[in-house]
Length: 125
Image (cartoon, rainbow, N blue to C red):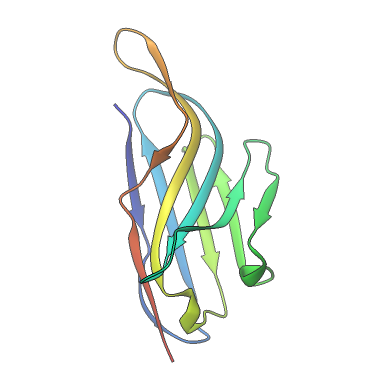
């Protein structure tokens, strides 16, 4: 009943920029925290950045001052502006929704951990 569509990934040279978007569609009542995770080859998935419904943000240390997370609550969309990209930023980036409440057609349901399909980001040196 809820679909996540991620976009904006691709191949970029070191020092370049990309902007990721993740739009949630469906009969959504509310979304608590929206975030971006990434998984590099051979590594565990890690939190990159997250933003609460009220706009409070958190970032992993390696992306501070380079990445900016934002959201549009009216559009149920979260963005990740990535500047000064480095080869170590390469990986699959996943959108994550924490506590999304939506209407199933007959009742309301809450999913505490909703993931997008992922989008590849490759930074060449």
